[in-house]
Image (tube, rainbow, N blue to C red):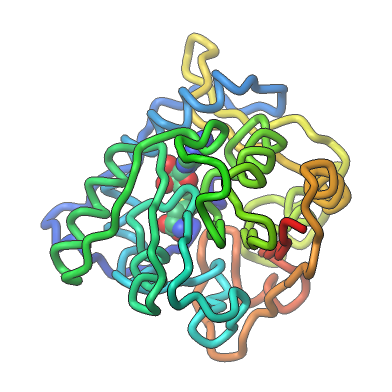
Length: 290
Ligand SMILES: C[S@@+](CC[C@H](N)C(=O)[O-])C[C@H]1O[C@@H](n2cnc3c(N)ncnc32)[C@H](O)[C@@H]1O
C-alpha cells in the first residue's frame, strides 16, 4: 500500500537537484493488516514521513510544483476544477500540508492560509519552497486529531491526501474541523478511493483483480523486526466516510471521483492509466458546516 504515499505522486524527475537520490526508509520486516491505535499511527507516520520527506519531495516535487493544488495522481488541478469555489480573502487551514504546495497556491489566490503538518522534515521542505517561490506559508507542526486553533477561526479546511488516510481517529479530525470552522464554513479533502483497498498496489493488468475484502477496516501496517509499526494507513469505506461526516455535524455536498485524463500517461505507484481508466483512484469529499 506504500504507493498510496511514497509513490503517491511518482514523477521521474527530481526537484532538489541531489546528486544521489535520497532513499525511502527501509526498516520494514513485515506487512500486515491489523488494528493500529491512534498513538501507534501518529508515532509511526511521524517517523516515516520524517525519514521519507527528502526522497518523496525529490521524487514527486516537479509534479507537485511549488504552488500548485492537485487533488491526486490523476492530476486534477484545483486551478481548473474549482472545487473550492472562490477563496479570496478566506481564512484557510490545510491539513497534512506536506511541503505546502496547495497552501501556497491558495495564498496566490488571495486566501490567508495556515498549513498543519505532522512531520518536521516535510515542513523543512515547505520552507525550502517558500524561499524558491517567494511566498512564506505560515505552518504549524501538529497532529490533525488535535487542532491548535480557536473555535470558528477558518472559512475553509482542506487537504489533498494529507493526514486523513493516516489517522486512526478520523472522527476526531472531523470533530476538530467542525470546531475550528465558522458556521457555513467548508471542508474539502481527498483520500485514496476506498474501492482501491480491494486491489493490490500493482499498476499492471494483474492489479485489476480484487483480492481483499472492501469491508475489512483493519489498518495497513508495516512493522520493524520488533513488531513496532513503521508505517500505518487506515481504510474507511465510502459509507464510513458519509457516516463520519454526518456524525461530526457536516453536510456532504459532493463526492468527486476524478477520471483519469487522456493526456496523463504516467504510472504513479499503484495508479496507472490502465487502472485509472477502469476504476477510481481518488475520492474528494466536499462538505460544509451548517
Ligand atoms: C501524501 S502527503 C500529502 C501532502 C501533500 N498534499 C502532498 O501531496 O505531498 C501526506 C501528509 O500527511 C501528513 N500526516 C500524516 N499523519 C498526519 C497527522 N496525524 N496530522 C497531520 N499531518 C499528518 C504526513 O506527514 C504527510 O506530509
